[in-house]
Image (tube, rainbow, N blue to C red; front, side, top):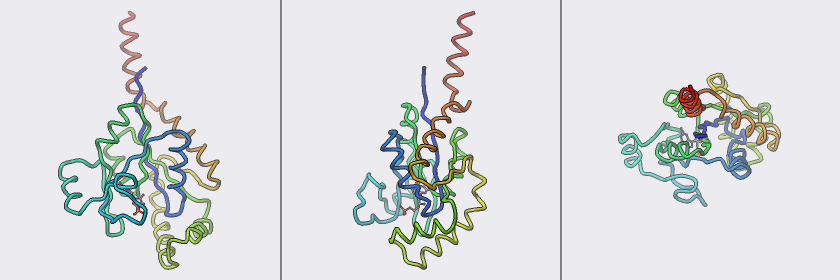
Length: 206
Ligand code: 5GP
């Protein structure tokens, strides 16, 4: 039976644990993740084509002009975008693709793809979010407060997402996400190929 992969967008507050969650989903269940293009300079240890495709502003603008991005957004002074070819080829080859992107980009993908599912990851409460950001030890107190303030703003967009998942315990959350992602294969939008092949089959049987 022909099978198309699903496309799911994963967003959430900074510190919600999206990165760890997505890498566990890839490790345990083999989901494909898209590698974004960005104008942000590489951090220590980041390599071209692994974490990101690093671009100059001019190169990034050219990608936009040539329609090579599914979506793009400006986030804290830099541009980030999802390359179209890779995502479409993976889906057409039956792979399930996850995009870990911020909200503006997520809403653009929703406008352009009727069969995308938007999933929002939240920690159980603000205290836990702050605890995780402090424990990560990569941000100053000032930046942590800014990220929490941004989370407060982002609360009003949560209802634009199709699914809201609480990341309290990582292992539980990975399993819940896998269950949710697999169930998406059964939505009618993701079953277009099946609907067509069953209809053709029944017609030719008459
Ligand atoms: P960072 O600079 O910390 O790697 O990423 C900053 C933010 O950009 C994160 O919220 C991340 O999810 C988001 N991001 C990464 N890639 C993309 C992308 O291709 N498109 C959009 N819209 N956001 C992205």
